[in-house]
Length: 289
Image 1 (spheres, one colour):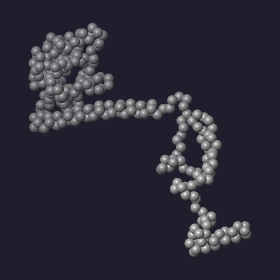
Image 2 (image 1 turned 180 degrees about the vertical axis):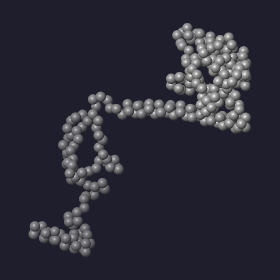
Image 3 (image 1 turned 90 degrees about the horizontal axis):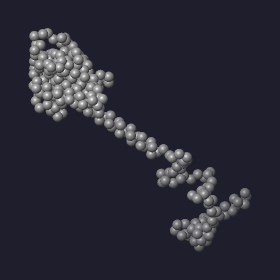
Image 4 (image 1 turned 180 degrees about the horizontal axis):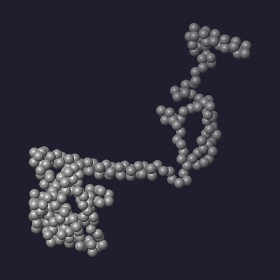
């Protein structure tokens, strides 16, 4: 790693190892932005990036835009850039992807670091403005590098691979959370559209559909009189008409069958005798009644 804070290597670090290994050190600063650079290190590289971002901020300031404030959380795992109020993570720069860090010798408020983007693999230079803590922030990142390197030597390189896997999982979780939020939004929009489609217009009367059986027919009830329905134009229905005798036939064109009205020649003798006996019993019963 190339670090401009090596000039302070003879001084002791300002934070305890536990503070950076188990927790993090937080600073507030103004975020000028980030820009792509051609090389992963170099003082001239960051100077060009600082000039570029300062010029862009000068234009935005003339348009009335303020420099956004951010919170930096520094640990042996990286540098997180968060919104100071909502605590939303704007950038998560893992320490093994940071290749250069320095404060500006000409402007004591400016400090920078170069980080390789995990998606595009481009080198991005992040530039910050801190009126009092620029050098201290740079030294804190340097101490995080020193502790991370010692931990790397102790673990034989396994810790770095674990951090890479954790970083990949964190990124996937963030993508899934974003996708889940988008799906919830689409589901809510569909529900609203369905509610609008099922709302009847003002002044309309909803008519409950009549229940039907499995053959889509209205069940017959012997206690319910058959009341002719009015026509669609509001006129009363025409009176029922009686069918002529020749129309009172079944669907095969045959007259209804009645065994007591048939002639004697219509049945064999044994069946006819039984029908005659039934007829006499029927007559005797009606007589005694």
